[in-house]
Structures are given as structure tokens and as C-alpha cells.
Length: 324
Image 1: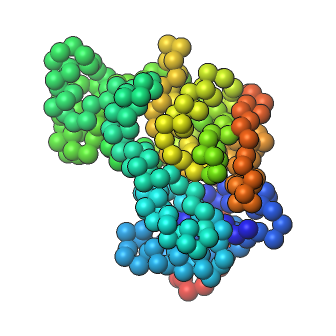
Image 2: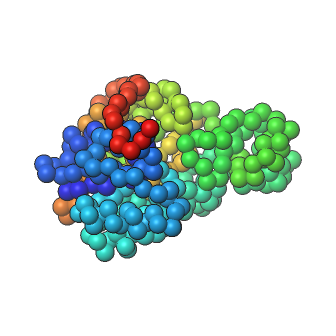
């Protein structure tokens, strides 16, 4: 089975885990727009491709699928998820399974305000969110909102632009400079994360690995500790049943006043998925089962609690042909 991993960037540890778990004879193909993306060099073959907004990008990826006899494709960056969702029929015509949600779910996950409205409509606990300054000011004047609050881009990723805001003066200044920001109530409970696998045949959640974030840097958790709670697993299954996912999904939660609040959904491998793999929750095996036509059966909490992940720096050193 040949796996195509798009926009791999720094995700070398995940590619190493893929190589460990793939069935004998399988190959790992990786792409990025930069020859200096270290994760490229953990794959069996590397391709440099245009930016994802280049008109030639999709045809380039489809050509790689033909050349390398690809069976499954996924991406590691949020902006590319909608492209894969939209172009799923072109991949399927080549016999390629796309690990991405359907278009409607992809749009919801990328638009944090629309996701808030969807979750409220379906009675899934989530942080109160205001779509613009005027909406927040109205709620504040009515005594329905108070400082401090949290702002972040409506369609951003990697926590870029996200920050705590202490006053109306600061909020007005920030939102004047960046109208894409939305405002959320500040959540002060435990910051949690769950790696979820949604079977590509049944589209049901079949595995989840939950962890508390101990430390976060550059938009992702780099120190986490595992825990299990059937209440959280039940909530995850409720959420998945409302949407249409296929493959790995990363969900962020807060636990506050005895309630789990969904913060965000990233329908891709999460940056801290290596923790799940290291604790025995192997999504790569689940992917290959699906590719063989074997529907995975639900198995939640099949790992130990209090297993800690601690990320550290490493390097790739090699000669890259054609570069300075």
C-alpha cells in the first residue's frame, strides 16, 4: 500500500511511525513546497510541489498518485483539507482514498465562528464566541460578556494571532488592525486534546486517545499526559455522528466546572499524535485495515493513563541536490 503525505513540513516523527507500522511492501511518498522540509527525508520518495494555491498544484498531486500507484492521501496542513475534500472524486477515480472530511464538514472546521454556531445549534458545549467587534460590544453592554477574553483568527491555524485581551481599548485596537479576529470567552479550565480515528467505511469514531496539555509551544502541545474518561469518549462519538469525517481527527477541549467544552476540530493528524502512537493507539494500522476493506470496530480507552510525552529537538543532515 502506497501512502501519499502532503505538505509534510516538520512532521518527521510521524513519518517514522508510519514506516514502522505500514504493511510489508508499502511505500511512503512525501511532498512539500520546500526542499528544507525535514520530514521529506523520512519518506521513500520526495516530491517538491507548487504552493497549494497554484493552479498547477492539484494536477501535480494527481500525477504523483498515478506515477507512484498511490492508495491513500492525506495532508498535514489545515488550508489543504478543503481542497482534498472538494477534489475527492478526482482522487477516487484513480483508486485513491482521501483521508479528509466532506466539503461541508471541512468548511465548518476551518471557519471557527460557523463551527461555534453549529455546535450551539446541536447543543454541544463550546466557548461563547462573538463573530465581530459590534456583536461583542452589544453583549458587553448588556452584561453578557466580560473581560478578559480571547481572540483568534476566524480561519487561522497553528494559534497564529491568538491571544488573551484584557480591555475594550486593547480589543478595539486589535480588531481594527485585523478584522478577521473573532472573540471568545476566556476558558480557564484544563486544556485537553484528543486524537480520534474515524473509520473510512462506517464513518464512525472507532478510537480515541485523550491527553492533558502540560506545555504548548508554536501552536501545539509538546508535553502531554494521557487520561481516560468515558464521558469524553461519549461526547466525541456524539460530535462525530453530527459530521462526516474520514480518517484522523484532532479535537481540542477544555474541561471546566465538570463539563467538556469543544474548542476546535482539525480533521487531520494532530501535532501531538506521536503520543497516541507511542502509547499503543496505532492509526496507521486502522488506515490500512480500511484500505483492505476491513471495517474497524470501536475500541476506546485501550491505553494506559499517566503516560507522558515530552517532545525534543532533533535534526536531519543530508546533501540536497541542486541547492546552495
